[in-house]
Image (cartoon, rainbow, N blue to C red; front, side, top):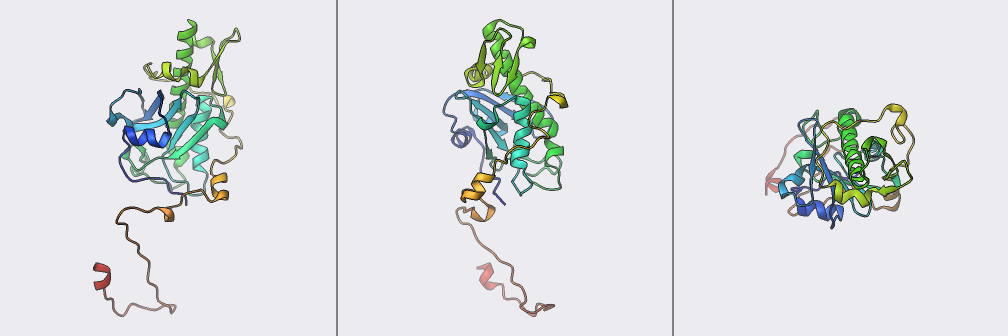
Length: 251
């Protein structure tokens, strides 16, 4: 099972190191307790980065912080596809990192950072759709401001905002401007017939890492002062514990 988390506080420095986002861009987060979306600009204080889930940098690369662990069900791909679909992102330019351990990424039903109960999609569905839709709306508004156009006439596809007259801006070109906008309170969501990734077969994002041996699993994690334990079992079926000497373990 690939490891989902790196213990520690998700501060500004940690986020920038994980995302390789040395430049400014659009950074958006989800509240862990209510279904609202917050926005974080490049100059935001450290504590605001505890809630960052999505980053679009000026090169057009889109980074999504996967809130759970990949346990084989495909949530790394599925949750990312939900965001990317609403964002109208260019799928090959979307990449992921497993979120470090932080309450901001807690499961909304279990209130801990966990994968289980066949609930990853159902519990995150609306939140992640709104996350992607918010980023898309901000890209559209940034383009509209540049063109002095009405946002309603603009269209998006594959990380590009298109004007009816043929002009276009890639998301990377708009990321800096979008980061200075206030996020919409209720961004419009796609209808089911507009989905391009959701409900359709897409290549799993974890396949290459698992085939190449690059995937990091729980058993690979090493922490300072980390201890190891194993279960001692009877060599005989039905055997019972006769005595236990815990001195070695306690030492």
